[in-house]
Image (cartoon, rainbow, N blue to C red; front, side, top):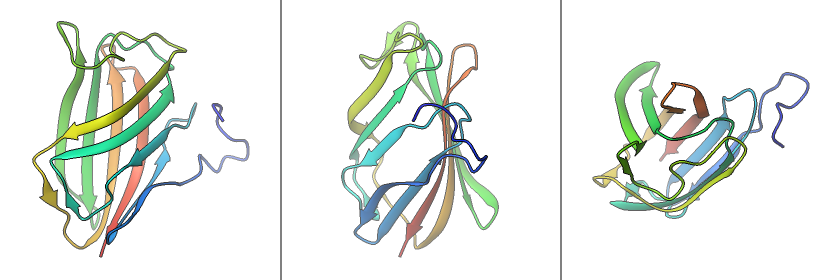
Length: 146
C-alpha cells in the first residue's frame, strides 16, 4: 500500500530480520507511504559489509540524498550520525538523481566498521531527506539483542 492506512493506526510493523540472537523490527513514520527493508545477515555480530535490501516509491526528487540515524536506549540518545548518500558532485549509487514517482531500490552492501550489538533493546530513528530537506523516507525501528 502506498497511502496511509485508514483508521489512524499507522503502518504495520515489519520484520527486517530475526535470527542469530537479533531481531530488527521497523515501522514507517512517513504518513504518506510504507517501504520495504531487509537485512541479509541477521546477527548481533554486524559484519563490515552488511547486505541490505531497500525499496520505496519516491515522493520527492533525489538529486541529493542524506540519512540521519539516532540510536536511543532507555529513553536516552547515545549515538547520532548523518551521512550523505547522494551528493551533487559525487553520486555514489545508480539511484542518485531519481525523480518523484520513480522506484528507488537498492540491494547490496552497506559499509561500516563492523561491531557487536550489546544485549538489550534499542530504538532507532532513521530519516532520509533530499537537498531541500524534504522527507524521502522515515522509520522507527526496534533492535532486540539477546
